[in-house]
Each structure stands twice: as C-alpha cells, then as structure tokens.
Length: 169
Image (cartoon, rainbow, N blue to C red; front, side, top):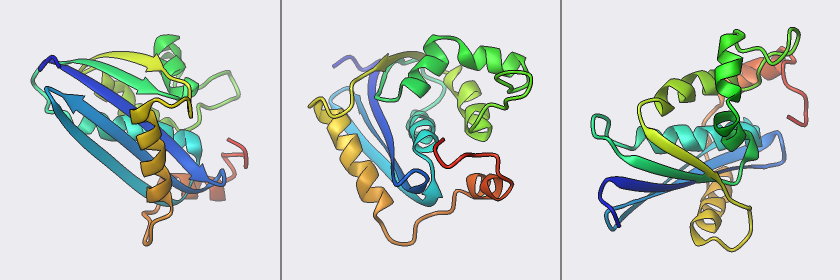
C-alpha cells in the first residue's frame, strides 16, 4: 500500500433516530490500520455520519500531504462534497433556502475547513453490501452506541429543546 495514500471508511448510526448514536472509522495506510469509534446518548444518524469523517481526519498528522480516499455509505456526506453543497451553503450563510437553515451546521463548520487541509476523494459505498471495512465500521458504531456512560451531544440536545430538528432528521 502506498505510504502517501490513506484509505478511510466511515460510518455513523443511531439506535432509533434520534437516539443513542455511534460513529466509527477505519484508517489504513502503509500496511497499518487504525480503528476509532465513539458514542452519544442522544443524537441523529446524520450527525454521526459527519462526526465519523471529522474524527477520522483529526487522526491524520497534519503537515504531510496524503492522498485520501474516503468511503462513506452516507450520500448526505458524500454529496455535500461532491455536489458542492458545502460551498453553496457556506456562501449563503449556512442556509439551504431563504427560510431553511442547514442542519448540523456546527459539524459542517468544523468539517469543511478541516477537509481543505487534505487531498480527499469522497466515494459512496453501499451499506450492508459485504464490504469488510464498511461492515466493520457499522459494527463499531452500534457497539459504541450501546456502550455505557455515553457522551452528550450538547449542541444537538440544546437545539432539540429549541425545536430546530424534526424527529426524522
């Protein structure tokens, strides 16, 4: 495997949506492998999908140029990059339309500049299609969401109290 190339698989899931959530990533480079995961007591699937990418990129040493191939089974995440949604949302003050705010803006505001530090190719993969690393991420997400003493997704929980999110985000 190329030492200057990193292959990443990410996934996020919720046990109920919203509900207990987990994120996970598998990073592979130069014959090495790293798995990361974490869970929250109440969140959404989409938030966990985004957070998985954030946490994966945070685990890459900055300053060195890597080619990153990032696989996600979230069309929401992949299309946000590949279809230019993030650029459009940012230029509109994080609004999708004049009346509709972008959901998960706190995470997008963290991920978008972070992603610009790397040469990333986003690739969509079908979920539950037998791709070993994607299946591993799915397992790690569910394991994390089932854990004890889960973290609090403070921004999400505060926004839910203010009815920013619907029950089926």
